[in-house]
Every structure is written in C-alpha cells, then in structure tokens.
Amino acid sequence: MTKKKHIWLSRQLSEAEIHDTSVDVIVTLPDRTRWMATFFTYQNIKTLRQKYKETGVNLSGTYLWAVNMIICEDLSRETIEKVVDDIIADERLASAMMRISDVTNEAGYEEGFFEV
Image 1 (cartoon, rainbow, N blue to C red):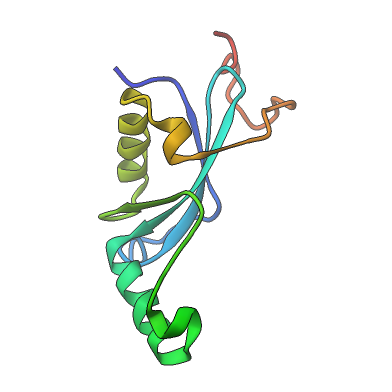
Image 2: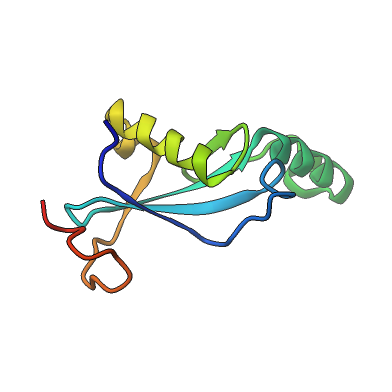
C-alpha cells in the first residue's frame, strides 16, 4: 500500500532529459513534515564527471558530491514516486532525505491532504 504523500519537483522534465539530468524533490507527508533530496540519473553522474574532467571542477572530475543525493535509473515521475514509496516503506526517509521546514500554509495541496 502506498503511503499518502505529495511530491514536488523543482522543474518539469521533458521525456528527452529524464535519463540524463538531476532534479530537486520535496516530499510532503500528511503530518506536515517536508523532506528534500536531489535526484540524479546514473547517466547524469557520467555526464557531470566528463564535464568536470574538461573544466577542471572537483579536481578535474576526481569526485562528485551532493547533499542528500539519490541516484536513479531515470527521473520519470513514475520512477521518482516508486523510489520515494520504497524509501518510506523501508523507514529510511530521515536517512535518505533532509527534513526541511514543516508546512504552515495548506495552499497548493489537495483538499483533505493534511487530515490524518
């Protein structure tokens, strides 16, 4: 069973870019807690490493880091939802994502979302 949640993406991804990009994701739960991570694709890690080798960034691609990084096969909405569901089901949300400020304004959420 999928736990009730709201997933916000920092930008809309086109079909062409879901295999080689990154996007910030915020997950809101009915208890008003919000959790944030940056989702990357495996291909995007390779692309960034090559770019850094060419530009000299991060010791010419010697390392790559991001706070609260989650790496996925692709960044389709379906995949992101499945990954978030799995993380929640395994009770790893606090380990995989950073807690950010709780919801204080219910605008933008479906009616009844916060009714627990």
